[in-house]
Length: 236
Image 1 (cartoon, rainbow, N blue to C red):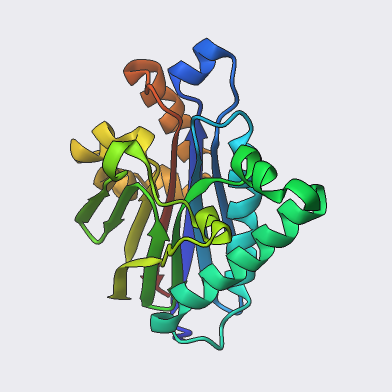
Image 2: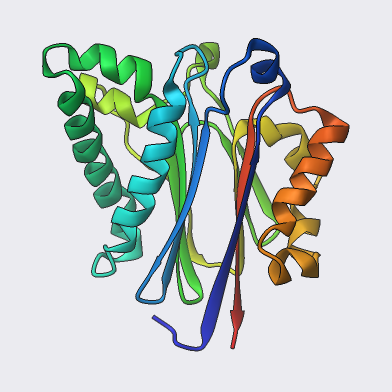
């Protein structure tokens, strides 16, 4: 890991207008963890058809970020599979601790969420996940489909015996990485992510990205919850 770089992270989230109209919570999650020079950011998006999926989404973002930050001994190329195995073990223990006799119902109601994760180690990064959203790496945008019938591949389905492998979206050098939930699809498609990295206030003031997203939401009125995490790595 290079000692000649430093990574900064910023996050922001807003509740979509449909959830405001229905009196529901923001069902996205976001968390950043740093350890031993590595920086990990995770964004999650809870299953909109379930009443309390924000519980799993928020806890899952925190759990995956903090667990993955401890895996500095795992090569970046192997990290997605190892991290997803840890996530599955954690999620299984969580739902069974609530109700062992009907863990499936707990999983469905609370534990279904998409995942996007970036792990930055010096100048190198891996970006992986499962489900929809968008990934931005050094100017290259990848918009991720929610699949047939708008049914994303939730990592929680692994507990039901389904094959849900992590998908690696980027592996190699990276300086600017953004993870976005699908509520920001129109914004990212219009090229809105890149200019955020060039806004010096985003990096000087940790609250500025949230303020920017609040202003944008007041104008655009995103239908769905909108969440993003930005990572910028620079030479010291």
